[in-house]
Image 1 (tube, rainbow, N blue to C red):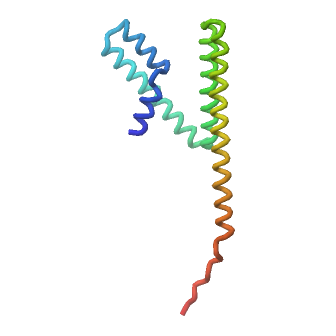
Image 2 (cartoon, rainbow, N blue to C red; image 1 turned 45 degrees about the horizontal axis):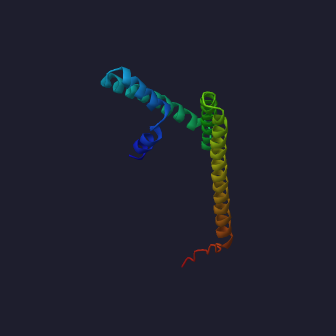
Image 3 (tube, rainbow, N blue to C red; image 1 turned 180 degrees about the horizontal axis):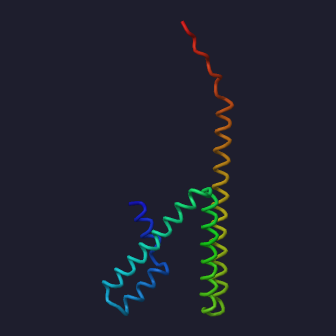
Length: 139
């Protein structure tokens, strides 16, 4: 249920949904629904297979960083494409939005690193304060 809810919320308002809305204005509802569902299932199936293959070969952090870079790249490209169609102030608005998102990401990444370091320090301190094991006395 978590995956379904996450996908539902993530897909709201994305390019795929907007394209489906556009198709539904010109074509019958059932073929558009079936086609968009089939296309999404194929796309997600490919993503799952690639994820399984990469997960077996690469560390999770490398996959996350790679996905973030690709996602950011597509976002930047979409922003530039959209900004070229906006009035002159559109570039400024887009730049501020991108700067805000990057700042939020970097802030969260720093907090995550600090939390991980704190957890490591706590674990190390607990290890140092652990009592020496007492030998078992045989009778």
